[in-house]
Figure (cartoon, rainbow, N blue to C red):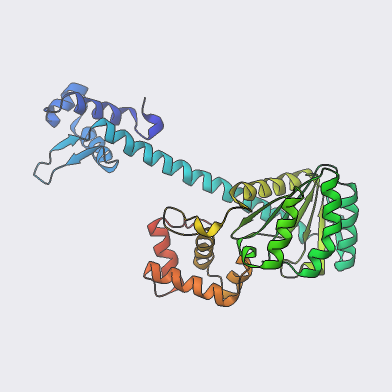
Amino acid sequence: MLQALGLDEAAESVYRAMLDHPAADLTGIGEHLDLPDDILRAVLDRLHELALVRRSTTTPPLYRAVPPDLGMQILLARQQARLALEQQRTEQSKIAAAQLIADFASQQQPSSHPGASQLHGLEEIRERIQDLCADVTSSVMTFAPGGGQSQANMEAAKPQDKELLQRGVRMKTIYLDSVRNHRPTLDYATWLTDLGAQVRTVAALPIRMIIFDRTTAVLPTHNANSSLGALELTGNGALAALCALFDTFWSAARPFGQTPSTHRDDHGLTPQESTALTLLSQGLTDEAIAKRLGVSPRTARRIAADLMEALGARSRFQAGSRAVAKGWITGED
């Protein structure tokens, strides 16, 4: 009955017997359940690990069952923690799979990848995006990393964005949290939402990407410089993964009207700090962390220093180790 909460049949039987017969000693519990002494003690050790029984320091130790109302709260809390971790691992797997597909596809020649075509240079990329915008019928989904956007790019995009929204195309754009401190991008995002677009922000994004009608994606072949070239993907497998990647980030992103700095997790970390800690544990430099977060290297150094101080760590490696030990990060990112 309680297997879904982590108790096997033997452990549940012993726990129930101890609740029903609180005065019984171990011999009596073993005889009642017809369990050999070694198996009974192994089960009691398991129940003690789950905090469902208390063990005295006497010799031999005495065991007392925790009241069921408290015991069930403990089991439910453990189960919720396991489910949350499993969900986090699932989302990380989606991201890793989509990133692998994008990285692999960007390294292939179009002839060796039927669902891909190469776009060379900024002019060709812009022309192809204009063509796709002209043909799109239902949705445009965009990852916009890099922090604040350039004024020239935003002004150039406004006529096209307005035309798409007037045609009823659903626009979803994810920026970095750092754009909330960049007035031009903030004004542009406000302008978009006033016209009916949906805008959200996250602490970090894996790639720059635009997906049209969930059937065509355009992403750069060089993440460090998107003007060098791009890849247009239309293969069903690649698009399914990239759409799942976008949906995962969209679900976790914060709507534009909300302020992420006021939101902290159970460890008191903002989304930006949590992401920075993960990047820190992976050995990224301050400059690389700054780029991922869309902040200045100086800000990245300050965030890293604050996190190391909070963890009492003298090095990045020690910070990562202590963060994993404290449960601040999973250590599997």
